[in-house]
Length: 154
Image (cartoon, rainbow, N blue to C red; front, top):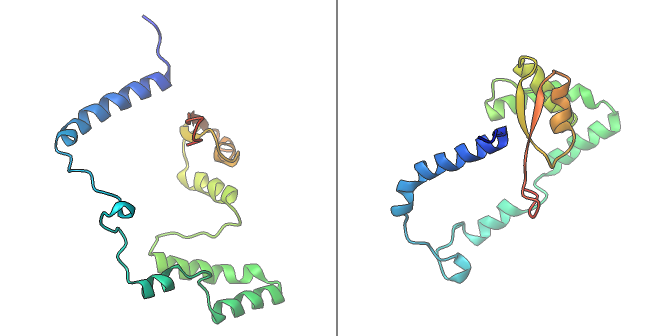
């Protein structure tokens, strides 16, 4: 018997599970709708006047411009971070909020918070910025690269 790799095992299990799970839905599938472009129903039915306001860019006004200019003029960027975190926490109703300078810093902070045991395996895309796998190495976690479709890079 040929030994199976983890990828073969996961792929086989995923296909089998999907087949069992989706079998009932395949027989009860509704008729396919036409695209709106081909005369089918529209997905977004917001009035044109309101749609313009929703999609207008940039979405900031004079108060936001003034706040940004004040930060740039005073050169005290970090003074405002606690206020920003507090207001963002209230707005999102999240239990914890921490501002970061970039995604690398955010990922590193996430691994501190998760406190995973050394050797934990974490699935990461193989076609991405290096920090997706580098940050976990600081915590002795092991990246498990997820293969992508080379034609679509997804």
